[in-house]
Image: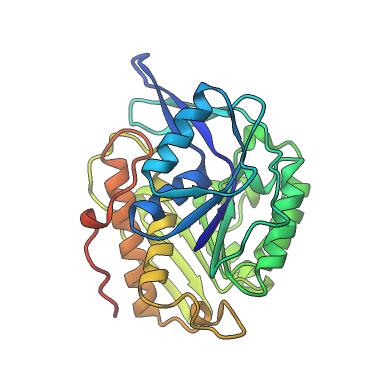
Length: 308
């Protein structure tokens, strides 16, 4: 079973014409639903309130074939993120977040663990997430999406210190060019990616919107062009890219192929196979931006992965 660790919340979407709607969201929760819709057994360790919005989130996770880890539901309100969309569908966010998960020290760890976003930085839960990642790296492939939310972060140096510690335990890091602009302004994204490879990551994938996605790996670098799909909105696009990338690694047998080194399969990837993985992830994201809200594709909507 895949383990995803991180926040669940309700996205309050405000469109440029003033229309409002609410959708279950949260980057890690979106990734979990994306994997569940693709048929992967997945457990989400999170923090959800017992209020009405919490019930909506739990129902969406259940529909997405996501199993909740023990102690994920507790007292208090469910977190929210308000996405303000411009005329192009691009989003900026305001947050009302509480991140204090219970039970992360005993949650079962499968062959792959994914985390990131708010859960990786916001106290008090960020320390527990970091401890889990370090523990998981001994037996599982760890994937990580920094998914920076600047409105919640006021100490860049502290964020960088924690991020570097997390990257050192990760087999795969997926990061947006906007995140890198905040983390390392003025430094070329591929330069940052190569520094993360030096820290210990096996693969760094950079998503760059209309410019496509770029990967940095010990074997070299890869670029995959973006899709020409019409954009309804970009909510959940990066999360669908992440779940598509994980799906490619799972369905081709890359996960679990490393023996005593869970990231060995990633480190041994050929550039041609890596390009195929990125193309698969790009299709997943393209389907999501073509409809409103974070609605990742089902297995029937994705073509088979063609390696090489």
